Image 1 (cartoon, helix red, strand yellow):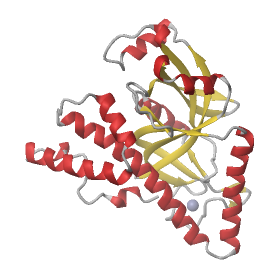
Image 2 (spheres, helix red, strand yellow):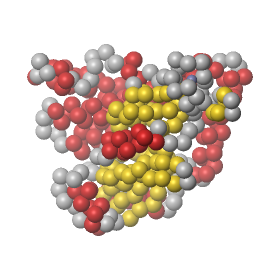
Image 3 (cartoon, helix red, strand yellow):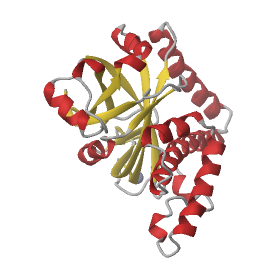
Length: 295
Ligand SMILES: [Zn+2]
C-alpha cells in the first residue's frame, strides 16, 4: 500500500449555485442558505509526473475522485471556532491539454472563514496537500512493481523518463491548506529550488540512498498523521460518545500527532472491549502497522 501526500492548487470561487447547494446539503446535518456558504475549487492530483518523480495513472483518477467527496480540509491556522471547516462536496475528472486531473469543489461557512475567503479572493496562492493510499506503484518503463526492477525514478532510459505510476486507490484522507508567504511566487520558487538543491547535494555527497530514505520517512509520517486523524474521527463516531463529527474533526486537527495516536489506541481498545468478536470494527492496528506506510 502506498500512502501519498501531493501538492495541489486553489482556484477562486463564490456563492454556490442551486445544484451545488443540493450536493452540499448531502454533507451537512442542517440545511444552509446559499448566502451563508462560499465555494471554491481545488485542482488536485493530475496524471503528470510531479517533483517526486511520481504520477497518478489517469485511469485511477475517477475512483480517487469519488473517495474524496466528504473529506475535510485542515488549515495550518488553528481552526478553533465552531464550524471552521472546509469540506469537499463534489469532484470531477477534467481534461486539459492532454492532462487529466481531479477538480474538487469545496464549501465553507462564510461567517467563520472570512480570512481564508479573503485570501482566496485576493488571489494569494495557497498550496493544498492531499493524502491518499494507492495499492500499486509501477515502473513506467517496464510496468513492474517499483523497486522490483532495475529502473530508477528520475533516470532516462532510451529517451524515456522513468516515473512511478500510482494506481488502484484504496482511500483518501483529509486535505490541508498550507499558507504560502506574502510573495507567493518567490515562496513557491524557493521551495522548489531548495528541494532541487538538496537532491543535488545528496547525490554529490554520495548519500542519495540516505536522503531518499529520509524523504520517504517524512512523507510516510505526514500521510500517517492525516490517516490517524481520520481514524480518530471514525472511532469517535463508532463509539457513539455523543460528540458530533465536526467536534471530533476539530479535536483531531488540534491534537499533536502523538496525542492523536494515543487517543486512537485507547478508543481502539474500547472498541475491542465493546465488540470483542468484530475485529473489522477495530480500525487501528495496535502496533501501528508501519509496514503499510513504506513508500
Ligand atoms: Zn522497470
